[in-house]
Length: 358
Image 1 (cartoon, rainbow, N blue to C red):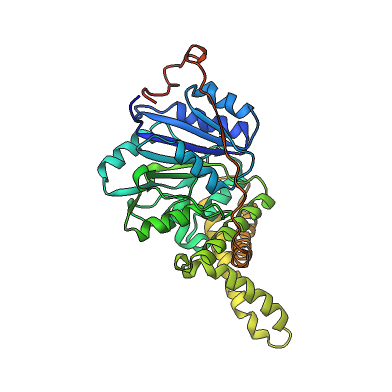
Image 2 (cartoon, rainbow, N blue to C red):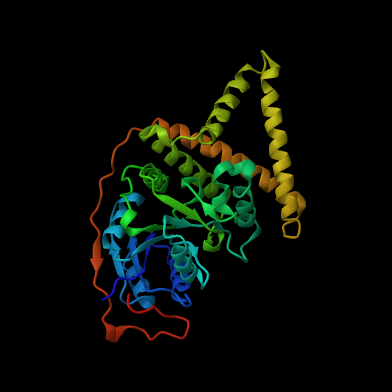
């Protein structure tokens, strides 16, 4: 069996609807290089059955307990491809994604990391669309906004990438940390940067990533992002950039200003300036979405609330991460199920195929 060009590595918690959409988008790749699909799950046996219905020869592992970084290490150990493409189970890619990735990798042999933005899927409800616009705003996400929208192709660093859509050259891969609840890709990319390895961002490598369905789940996501970054900062101070600490400093300021306002009202001036900036950003986002439902006022209010949620949630999580002691989680060992026999494999259609060899 020849070595595949790409190992598509997917972690799933067992959301079959999302996973099936992800696998379907991989299955419909056109003019793709040889690739394999590897899935690690903490879900039930239905996961393996679903994966094998689309990719009979794929590796499917089940692990009872593990953090995401350790689970991805299991995928890396299993992978045989020249490139490792990490996708979340709620991500879909366009039919030419792998073909474009192969061309970009050929054009940039110096790069050890490739990636692009994660966009809001087309046809989604207004709330996820507003989320995507908020996350792509420089006033909201600062130096990491390139993860959420198209920007010019070129040299990159860890600020450009997220693990829901990230390709790493196999020979350059380092282990994911097994003690972080998030930001594990930032730990890996920072270490690769310290080793002098080069990275390339290209908007052609865009993937569609499902957004959160509710304010609560969105807030939990922001807290988790901040928590992972705070843990990483405590683990390695050199990974800290000033922008990552700003939301936490603002949160501390808000708490202090609330207590001191009755004594010295001028302490509220920065809060008033911030409120104006939030309003202006929300207006800009609303204008960009002016032709979309649910209407200008509803979009304006939703965008403003999401901006506050990003900053305060991330800031809260960051402080919590700084205060969290590192305790590597007890890791389970995955059980890998045998591939489906060739005779039992479903027939592929003209667009639904797994290129040989895999």
